[in-house]
Image 1 (cartoon, one colour):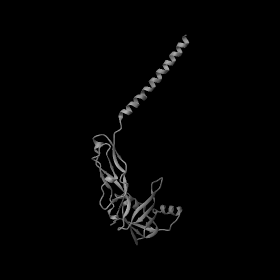
Image 2: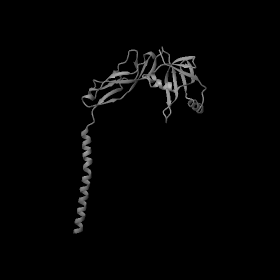
Image 3: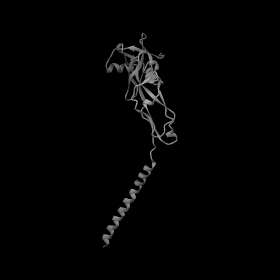
Length: 222
């Protein structure tokens, strides 16, 4: 069950000026959405929301949203907006959570180990897909889905269908999407050849110019 409690206050929906005044007072506008209620206009302390967003579970954190000390809902951050210049939190959307209903949400993939193809063969690990969509009950939301890459050699890869998740978590993303692969190292010989060609070009030009000058001189003498 959620242990974090975030206090919220009711507010009258307003335009940009009303929201600007609200932010100057140290709080930000927010909206609570839910399947069993109309959207509710509220305001919250942005520092409390930042604490949630920077926690280990991030946006997937479930907390108790207490509106004016009476109405309480289990909630999650659905979306948020940042000031484009300062990066401050300026608006938040919450979604009401029913602990007995499945959620569909995005969960990060966590790499474990160092590929053999990188450590021994000098390859490069390409982390292609960093999160997947899953469905589960709120109490079963994983912090991340771990994938061991230590056995990967050059040109090996892991797809979504190869990920291992708890039996209570269903992965919804396309099973054929590549999560991580090891690609061959960049060939240095190509770079050396290109550098050699570039270095020889000025010398060729200089010789050509000298030859032309010699011909002109011969014509004058004759």
